[in-house]
Image (cartoon, rainbow, N blue to C red; front, side, top):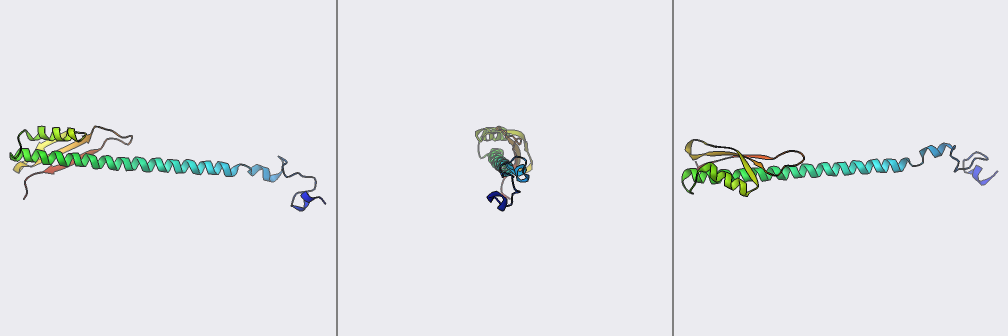
Length: 134
């Protein structure tokens, strides 16, 4: 009996033979590793996009807050200027534009902003209202 036959091969069958049953599974680990690698890359891209969207939403909200505070100060007469014009200027300085600005009762101002930079997920908007202390 040959050495090959003692290792579980049939007599006369060579382990490198393409017709051997184990040959069909050769390379399956490579395909699985590539698939897993692609899944990890896709998950990383998704996490980066979500993190970028969160950061952009924070920036849009901050621009709206600052614009509303500046507009409320202008509405109360603390700073010169028209409240919505002041809000538009402050929003522009923070990389945003005003979507809407409305003056309410008691010198309150509500401002909606949108960032000028858009992400692949979409635009980020912020909404804020400011006025005198109660």
